[in-house]
Image (cartoon, rainbow, N blue to C red):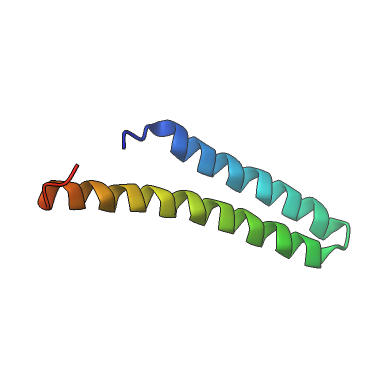
Length: 68
């Protein structure tokens, strides 16, 4: 479960790209698409974080229940 700074940079990169796409689409008058792009970016980041939290809970469970 060794996470390094790359995960933080991936999440920040996704945020920057989504913000840029959202701004461009909003200026083009496509607010609906802009909101969908933001929602999809949020879901991707949420999935990444949920995976890391699941790994953390598996490690904690393994330590306290003495399972591999």
